[in-house]
Length: 113
Length: 111
Image 1 (cartoon, rainbow over the protein chains, first blue to last red):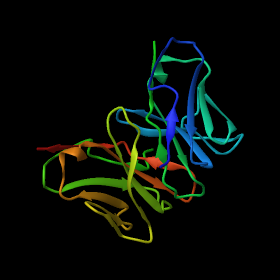
Image 2: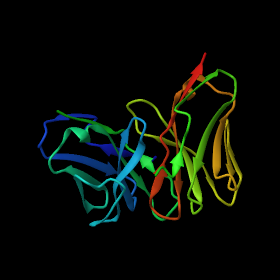
Image 3: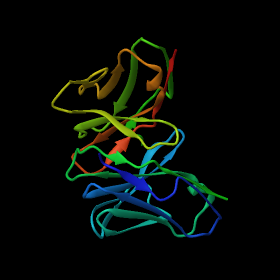
């Protein structure tokens, strides 16, 4: 079974803090994704990575950056957290290619005060 | 512009009856569609998929129908069970790594 883990289930940070969200997958997947889920808006893609050190912006990359130094790990960074970044953050991975099923982690509920 | 739409935010169904969840899309380039189920405080889990070369795919109690001319897909759950109560997302892909998700439909199956 594919396992995608996220470093924290719940996180509370203050405005202006730098925030790191970590995601690890154990199935040697090529592609990894970061989404945020907000009520009424569904899942929106922030960034994705198709290989180590490779990344592409998704639909809402502003205020975020990512890092993928190792194949199994994909980090989402909020350089200076703001209250409008309070959300559920979901990491996902797929094996390779297009049309593959995405496997999701359990999510991190981030609250920025 | 919402390319994938789930116009019903919620749906209630009696146990044992059929649940029908709908999804509409606007991009004719989409060729692969998936349904995910999400319980509170958990990540979405894959349920069933369909490629554009098919119009139906079945897996146990779950069937997905695709109507390409109407740009519409639906998920049928028969019979519905209380454990099916969750939020259901449809997603679409156009031969890229990127998936576009709908806003979700909350299904409640009443015992």
